Image 1 (cartoon, helix red, strand yellow):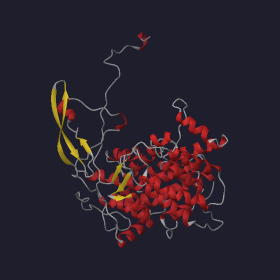
Image 2: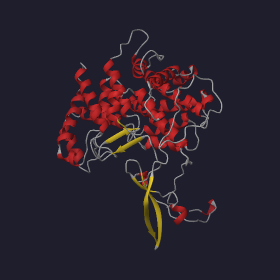
Image 3: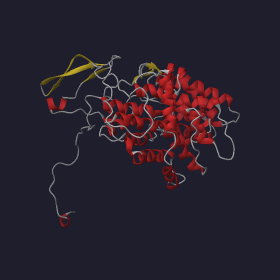
Image 4: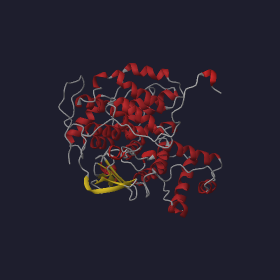
Length: 461
């Protein structure tokens, strides 16, 4: 079921022409009533709507619970709370299913590139050839950042984490591109979408170049999305850089499998910040900050750092596997298991093949890769891991691939942000299309002091 498209353009902005389609959010009203749930509180019974989604996910609608009963729900971490309806991504952790706009991730990863998947997420449909060409040209039009923004990098310490730089510069885009900040103007929103998708690789690569003291490399619009990023990351002015097509393909695959993942921490952050009508640049900057945490986008960095620790300790894999099995050891195997997936992560299946291909190709020997392969074998064969469904996840394999490509570990979450960007954008747009949109404002259960009498400072003990 399709929602109304964005309203007609109120006023144009000075930018390249828009693509034929308009960013959309589909599926509002897709939930159907399936009876009621009865709730008894202090002897009084209440009826709450029981809803079902298109994939038979069930939910109790508690939107009127407080008005009806004076009671709110408490759900730390929102692990049992649906914050919204969404038509973007379907995820079934028990069955290991991930679909973007109805298309299995396995099909998209095989048949599409990242730009095409981005179009699908943002516009709600796969593009025609003309639409994809127009979209690609639009991104090429916006790859450079304002020259004044290059001076920002001189103000950051050389050892600044690239995620800190990325979030700061993305937030600053709203100061340089004030012609596209109106969240109610679909034309301005679309220009901001193009700018973000086009400029984020440039901003990210500049962060890396700053950290190693090399000149910033301008984007090249004759290259593909991933080739352009690798060029800006690794090229230097004094010699020609040859892009390895296998590296470009591997990066494209990783960006696709990271492109969206339902209502995760960073996506929920983007939606929450955007619910206040904050502009798209500000909302995405907030999502980058949320992604930075080691329990979210920093997990692939933490996974490689764990492998480095094992190598530094003599490569004794059995020792660390045994420690992981002991509850009181304080050691945790990073890159295994998933909060949502209780089956093999479908994204991990895809990138494992890419990981094996790159490891077989690269000439240099890295003990990290040996340890990774040993841990993988243990996790797939040891009954302890099998019973607890602690399979290698997307963070485990992606960290190994990034290292094989020569990407420094601090850049791992930055690449995660590049991949997740179209998903964040799609959710931000979907939220603004929702007929029931309201500012996010969770409730709480207060556990502090009751009413207290104020005492002058002279009488306090």
